Amino acid sequence: MKTFEELGVASEILKAIQEMGYENPMPVQEEVIPFLLGEMNDVIALAQTGTGKTAAYGIPVIQCIDIRKKQPQALILCPTRELCLQIAGDLQDYSKYVDDLKVLPVYGGSSIESQINSLKRGVHIIVATPGRLIDLIGRNTVRMDEVGNVILDEADEMLNMGFSDSIDEILAEVPTTRNMLLFSATMPAEIAKITKKYMKQPREIVIGNKNESNENVKHQFYTVQAKDKYLALKRIADYYPSIYGIIFCRTRKETQEIADHLIEDGYSADSLHGELSQAQRDSVMQKFRIKNIQLLVATDVAARGLDVDDLTHVIHYGLPDETESYNHRSGRTGRAGKTGTSIAIIHIKEKGKIRLIEKGIGKKFEERNIPNGKAICEKQLIAWVDKLEKVKVEEEQITEFLPSVFRKLEWLEKDDLLKRLVSLEFNRLMEYYRNAPEIKAPDLYSSEGRREAGREGRDGRDRAPRRTQPGFTRLFVNIGKVDGIYPNTLIEVINHNVRGRVGLGKIDLLQNFSFFEVESSQAEKVMSSMNKAEFLGRRVSVEIAQEKQGGDRERGGSYGRRSESQDDYSSVRKSNFAKRKEGDRNRVNRTNDRGSFGTRKPTDRKKRY
Image (cartoon, rainbow, N blue to C red):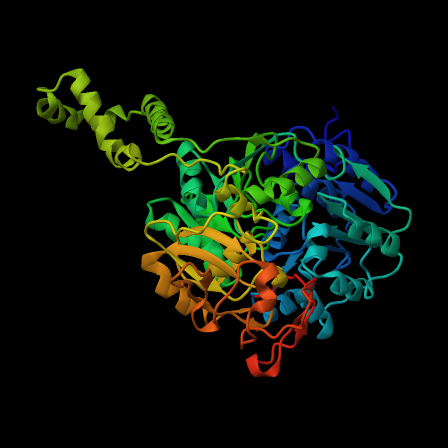
């Protein structure tokens, strides 16, 4: 292994990085730095998050700056404000002993006037998010005719976030003779398009295999029913007493609700999503960095560029749609040579998605059972004993108080004293888990498991009659399979529109409408909230499902009698709910007398609610 000095790093930069604790270059640094310090050609560097990419391009870029020219000579583009600030901070640290070098972070959410003033005074390196930089270009306040190096950091994520046109606009302002450095954790097809469009015979440097996950990360998944998802999350958090991690959710609403529930239940948690103000986001991140918060509940976009190296776990409360997104999430842990665990909480139908991710990252997931109460209490107790053994005793500080403490406790035997200490610490936890039932994975071959997976019989229903679970109310909703609804989609629609936790039971998806169960105490709230909702531009209607006397099948209130069999559907009278062409099962015509929903092909299954 070479040293930084052998790589050709200048003495003033070498001094700064040694003070930061850098001893030997990481693999990506060893590959990239000498190349960039030589002939500055285009480079594609593929390496996982946390492998030292910033130093790999930051050190040579700093070293190539001409301090005498007070104009931007290097431009670093990144997707989020957090990553922008992290990169700028790292570059300032590396250039601590490079006199008069100016690095400017440019991002939305802060004063543009302040950034304009800094540009007027002169800067050498700009670290920017695309949106704010385009704003500055539009105001003619930034010149880029001297830019010799353009770096796209987290390039795949910028494309995922829709910055392709912005990148085109920015690069049009940069000299065509510039060098382009593209750094990414994955290599999707969109990245290949960028290389062909903007780069000149780039050298590709790959650390590990393309799109392969970090070797230091273990991948696990737990399969649960939808109604048990939050309870499973709590048990996983309890099973790892020293957990310090990020819980990823798919929507802002879900993110806030999960964080609120965790806080209410006594966990050290907070949320990070796009609806928070910049001041709120900064406050949350500061508390998370100093470990005042153990669990950060976040959306994918909000969590990009987090400067946190010691995460023990990443938990996927909802799996992302793309393998690259999963890779980015799980890459937040297992950084800087440390180990980490990536945990997915899924339902039966998502097992296929797990297999696709396994193929994409080149690693197998370990399927695990949700820990029971006894195992959790034992794990917590052992962790507490470890802390007790390692606690630092300040003899001078406590000596004067010990005699009175000894007198107060002298009547207790050693065993009694230990029992009381344990009880003081764990009574609440043990009480909670004393009678708590086990959370079991649904059986794929049971009727409940088939419903969880959306696998009804050929005619859209089980042969056995439906029986509502005790304590639950069965509701009718006017959307079904023809609308592109799956169990997870319906759950997301409910979570998106109903405030607070909803206790869900059985879900039955039929061709043209569906039924789902909720806890009876929440039925009115769910109906009230859902009846204000839209799905794919169509108004949602939810009612209590009624069982007609005499053995007739279920129906949905004012919408008239419904047949659960698609074969019987042609006999249902036409109503405001639907007017179908006879014999046409594949198209839904939404007519004027039921609202201006228009006509939509059933193949249009994008979620836009």
